[in-house]
Image (cartoon, rainbow, N blue to C red; front, top):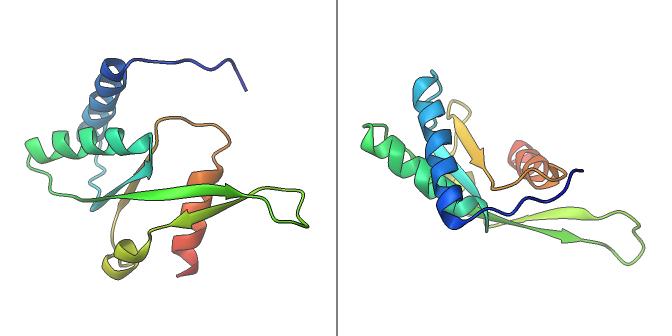
Length: 119
């Protein structure tokens, strides 16, 4: 992994709107936007607001993940919290956009996708 780069809140907002613009320019129209708590939440809000301004209605929610290392486990696992709303609302035809503020290991998003797939 490379060196960490810290950005200002203004840069995060600008980059979030750039992401939203790229989504608008694509054919992808999400039904749901999931922001990974905490950093992905402001990204998800900005993208949702931009899509809404363009007339694209999406449902949006924040999902929390946490890392857990068991007593007899040498590897960390990712726990996903707060899926109840999505589980009740999602169906197989829905399009889901998952956003976060960084890409580190990818384990949080992988765990979220696996947990949704298991239900």
